[in-house]
Image (cartoon, rainbow over all chains, first blue to last red; front, side, top):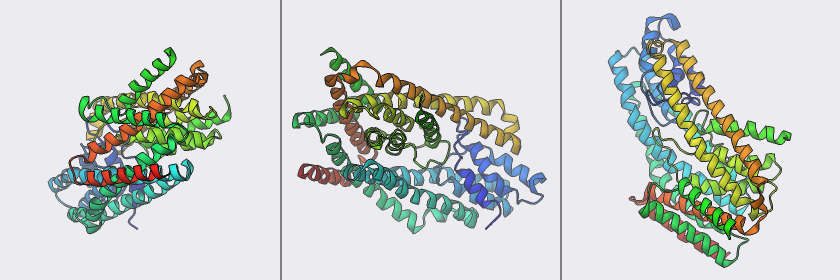
Length: 245
Length: 223
């Protein structure tokens, strides 16, 4: 294994620790790529290393699980001696695709699929089983993707864009979204039934009514007043009514 | 303060860090955070139940770009601490309320540390632009330290809230507590549905969601 690859991989897990509104994860990204840059001519005291670090520390943002692909590709490009402007262009060119592919693959695919499965298991077997199934299923994808991204970036260098159009990625983006939507769709009523298992029919209908009201507020009445905010206000009203009655 | 509450502070801090800064192994998902917190207190079912309700709220969040979002993980730890040992439905509603408040405060605290990181990056612009490895590492570790402090403070605050809510008189007053339980379950189901609709509303995927809902309703009614 290439020296520095393992250290860089571990550092990608802390990529977002210094997230800021100026450079987003740029500094964290530089921290992650640094072990791979030590192999540049002259080592840590060399001109190439210092110049590469100066370029690395600028603005960067991407999906955290796929940012390793840019780490590997840019480090490889630096090691291959690509001109500075080409390295810069490569780094900037990866921001958008790594963000959009990661968002679609993970946040809109693997995540809802794993959550939906976890909630179904929680309702049908036990919350402990649900949490375990969720963690194992999700992290099998997560950890594989992180390692694959860094390896592919390092292997392909400036031609890394081909990795993003690989069959597996395309298929993942095509199927994970519908699977996630299906599983979450299944989980919502099943979990609702489990949570309301001790209530009488009228109470169950009241729960469904509050749920429908929540959807109506989020979709049509006041979209900004959704999720957490709707939950907080609705709970405060219920507390007040319950207290006064 | 029992040793279990000490472990809850440790767990809540780990969960808070997992949200963004360290790993994103999804320990911060409320189902996981709440179940483990409940297990620490000897009541994984109560922790898992409030965690599952908060998980519904978390499905409303699409964490893309630099968006900041509620810290439902630490919220679930506080909710589990409120619900553990409380009798059934009496604890659930108020516990989820506590969890929602903590999640909201966590979102606000996340914004503050990102602002602090931004001020820090501007203050050390020259050293960072020079690409000095020491400056890069120091800046990055300061950002991490800020999130450790945020997560720990949020957890301690959340557990203090849990302690207060657990001893609050209305928890023993059946009608109010049950009503809050009904409302938070309904609001959670609504949040999850609206969140998915917002994410997939204009695409073919919405049909899969609809199919899942229909099958799920039939499944639930048949039981």
